[in-house]
Image (cartoon, rainbow, N blue to C red):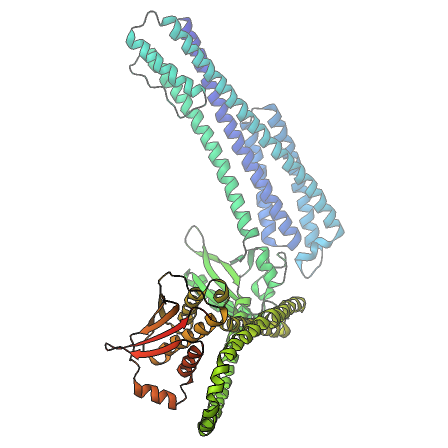
Length: 635
């Protein structure tokens, strides 16, 4: 009987604590409503005082009435003396604020000004507004104090509930110990289950329930305990969820309108700005205060307004979304520079499904458009350069043709000196490779470095020059300098590939294959027998240039874009073969090539022979050509 009496008492205390939680939650809701209403009052008050909008005044006084009504309703609901004193003081501050607000409105309406937005410049109105701010600040402090009292009461009720829960668990454990001698094995298992679940609940696991069977007093008590536990869990979870959603909504809204890199705005059906973020206000060249409450005709240029109204027509009339539309014009009538925007517009709908306005997302793409125009100009300039160089090459080709005819006439005279020139050819080839090396080094170390320095100084100069035509010209010159640097680098690699000196002939040929694949689409396969093939750098360079000439001939004459390059060691000689499956190479073709100026293969043959090697080129029966270069491994 004593245990039952204690259980009833603890259960009653739990029920009382549950009621305290409900009352604390209700007080917290009342405090939140009062705080929200006070915050909206301050917003509409500032909007009316700053802009003189009649709509803001009506909302302000409507919120005054709502706050008065809310305080009158909240006073009977609050049973805490401290909270009642706060509500009484809040009603006093609100009444004083409302009384002064009426005087402020009468003063602002009495001031004869053309623009209501400047009525607050009156000295008396400013003093009244300061008094209202003092009362509203005190009212906000009392609302915050009321919230704090409600939150403290909720926390105390929660702690009391936990303590009572622990007391109930301890009491149940005591009853279990006292009655353990009289219970059967089944009863002991039931009590063990109840104790385990109660311990978990006491440890803070409110999602746990005590599982019991039967209709006895123990089962009924467990069900009452589970009901109280579930209520505590539901109240706690609801409170946490409500606070979390409120904070997340506020944070998301603040982040969207403050930190987003695009422009955001909202208009009513009269095309009057309701809200705008700082990014779009900066794009328009005006502050947020110069947008809110004004129409687009008062803020933007007339040409841009006409274009926007035409784009907004389906949004406002039919509630359609307009996505990814480009707008061109100037936001400020005094701004001579045209700008480009990429915009998306969506309707604002009321609860009844009517269109009440529109909202938009605007992205400034002026720099991208200017870059596209600059690239088009550069492309046109490059095409003109190509045409000019093509004309020059045609003229040079005609001169070369004439020179070849002249050389054919004097060829007979040079035959007598051919033997002597052959003796000097090897030295000349070595000198040529050294000169090629020297030219490549000068291009890289002097001309290339100076061009890079000029590019850096030009970029620094362009960054210090104000925007305009000079900046576009500087960027165009910088692009030409960068292209010249790339051309010099490519020419340096062709004159003296770094891989040829550092990694060997095979690596240099593989690099050559990648270059020709990028330039002409030639697909080259490479094979190496893996044997040591040591050559002086000059001979490696001559063989590299010869293979390059053969691979270019595949591109120009073979009728195919596929070839195979193989390196092997045959005794004390290096053998390089270039094979393709093209149209083949016959005697008639060789004669025609010689007559038409086919100097490449003849030059290859002559250089290889001067190195003490041999050069052969034959056609395969199945179609295609095999060119073989053989040079001694020792100079």
